[in-house]
Image (cartoon, rainbow, N blue to C red):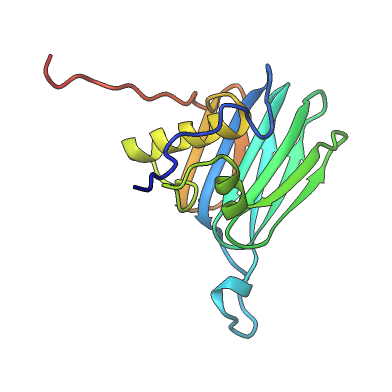
Length: 177
């Protein structure tokens, strides 16, 4: 009789220690406009992200190729940025803070946390997606997400992580009550 792995590793891959963990997960971003058409996987979308919090760790996921343009405000510290996805990802950082960038394929990341049930990082806000995001983030960093912003398609404009970004929360209710 064969059994599948169903629990996550108890040792986080990239320990957050006391840092806040901020997660942004998208399926795809806006691609290039105009020019000759290319296959979808060749189009690199761009996402702008401004960080205005101290002592943080970022987990950035995009299924399709994405260029993450990260602007870190003065006085903010980022332990490191974990960028992952099914296709090539890149991070461009502006500002005085130059965090360590950890680029790992989505498949390798999920295999490393010893969970076979996940095909990719969740990119929605259903109860299952919130739970899956919490399980994956805790296995990767040792902490639950402080904030979680997820979209199938990245919204126009920029992402912001600041003291005004809503905290990540989910609750379970007992229907028998």
